[in-house]
Image (cartoon, rainbow, N blue to C red):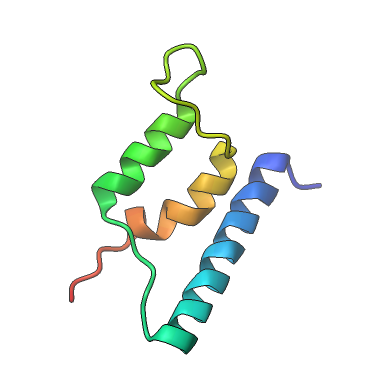
Length: 77
């Protein structure tokens, strides 16, 4: 049985693939975030509520699935 974290990470990855496919098909664009921005958003999501400057209401697993390709691969245009 898969954990909730794993399922959320897979859902985030599937959402990323779907958004990238739609953007590429209809507009000819590719979805990507700078590595620094992706890292900061993941860090803000992972912080506990009492020390976070503002609250991101998305689970860490979902955000990890969304931003993991940007952290692992570097795109050079």
